[in-house]
Amino acid sequence: MEPEYVAKAQTLLARDTKQVPDFWLKKYRQEASKNWDKFYKRNQTRFFKDRHWVQREFEELQRSGQQVKLLEVGCGVGNFAFPLLEANPELFIYACDFSTRAVDLVKANPLYTTDRCRAFVCDLTQDDLPGLVCQADLEAGSATATVDIISMIFVLSAVPPEKMAAALRNIYNALRPGGRVLFRDYGLYDAAQLRFKPGCKLEDNFYVRQDGTMAFYFSTERTEVLFKEAGFGTVSLEYVFRKTTNVKEGLDVDRVFVQAKFEKPVNTLSAEE
Image (cartoon, rainbow, N blue to C red; front, top):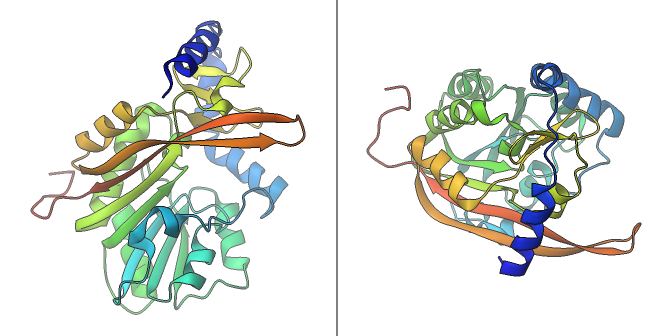
């Protein structure tokens, strides 16, 4: 990052010393699923744009001449899965989210077909993800507890920091040895982080939005440590910078994301062993 931009961002964040009271902090964590359900009830399928860019950024999602099983965690309403299924007929996608309403919206989409996609509800921080994948696979007529690729696109940021390790252990156990995690999420000093008003900070780099949903902003260093401690090796890891225009406010804003690929070692035990 440009030193001037970092210095300006650090100055802005240093002014925000007001944190959410413990009562509300506990409440936001306990009601995370409920708040995302309310989000999807309010916005239905209208909020997020289809993510056609993912094949450009991750060549693993392009056609390879063989069948590939992909697990999308935090699938939302299918903005990642459905464009990808149309673009790559070699993919079978397991799609999960901890919002029941989001999964229902995926299943209600006319493009949803169980011979190419299986959607289910899952809390990454405590549910048995490999078991749920296996159950979905049995319903599809086979039996597999692990997949070739796992996508985590703007997902881990919604998990409270103290639960991230448990979520990544779950991810690790659902991925076959040699398989990869494709990761993109909010980066430290992203414009969205700098726009939070005082009283929205839950802890350092972790905030609550007006609708009760939460967001963490990652450094590349923090990201690598989290995945390394879960057993993954780093294939690539970088900041992605984008300038976007807020038409409503007539402003150019600096978006910062962390994009990475992590690989599960070929010779390995489960994260529980």
